[in-house]
Image 1 (cartoon, one colour):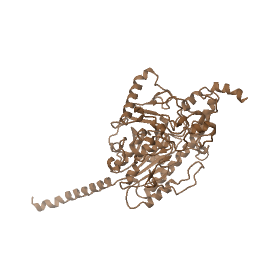
Image 2: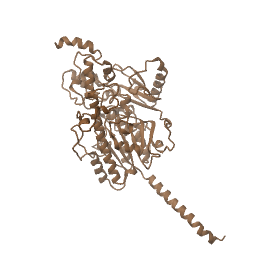
Image 3: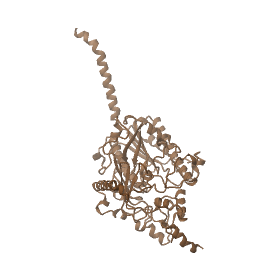
Image 4: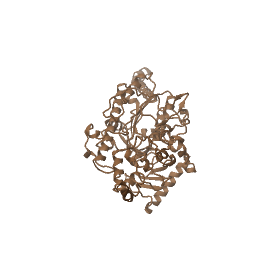
Length: 548
């Protein structure tokens, strides 16, 4: 066969190869283009209170869409269940005991710790936020201006909320304003921080405005009373979760309209547990276990998966840097403890229960949250999750976990549920419930979450679990030493010495009779002098003649 006869036969093959090359180049270009990042964070929402997790009385269609078209995480945790330290962990990729003063609540944010949004801004990303960024606390000053840990604020657009307790910030409209002012085609990272479902709530709003029925709630956690008061409190909480989700839906629609939806990594979560007793401000399952869903068509293989791996909030920062193509060295951040979630994104052969290497263990803890103890000391705890168990080590078990009773248990937000538990205890009713929510804790706690998700039965003193307890304690302490936790080296009191910026020396001032502001609790939360909540029957009998 002549060369001339071969040329016509080769043309189709050459054209096929050419088209394949162009398609591959286009795909490579699309993959190489850095994604936008939308980080949506509710204020005080616990797992599993989203309809994607099967909770029928909380409707979250926007969250559900993100999960359905991406990943739904079943075991995501904040390392510290309070607003400021949790958000500090998110920004820095470090556990709270690695953050000096930022381990505490209402604090100064150390200048040495750069956050991922500052790092992305220095590497070509447009950044901004609406609603609640990092806080409460003092972010510090850079070049004479307040430090913008989550970028410039976009909160000028207002709306009329459905209740007086909901913020009037139009989060979605502010996101659209951010998109409109963005220059060129630079990628962006936007922080949508809702103020919901943080308290206070408009009592009865879940029924009156949300069309809910207390009978819809399948189960009330065992450490709260199961009655109309608590069920209505939960429905009011659900109404605010749904309000946050409605703005998420509008933001997703804005991304779609702008042609940016499929080129945006969307992450939806919350900062810490719900504002109820034994949740927010503690170290139990309901306080640290968070909802989490992610969507990114360009980077997530096999969307619609459920992820069983342990995921910590310190994994967010390295993930965002990874997808943005910013190395840790180039980020200018302190060394990062968390690990990128990109391997989970790319996992094309997931199997139920199969975990990525190293994702079978997770650490949590806390230092000082709110004041209300003598000398402004905190309640230091460290904990570890492994094999369906939670081990907690309380370093100062003689202190009050939720702050002193006489100063209103300030580390537990005021609520109808809190009021009810305290009132029952004062009448010497259901004292066991008060102990679970407000009482002192032993030095060690161990819970089998496979049987006891409410963390009711402490197995630490059970000889049958000695080996499990000792093994988890040793693993926890070894990990904390490797992370230079001051508690492991006899320097833990440093966390108590950092100043509290809003209510310093609350206990001392209150005991002197000075009027103190504590707007996040009820006046009735303060125990009366002479009443011992640990012995309510004896105290009530002793105080009765004085009342008469």
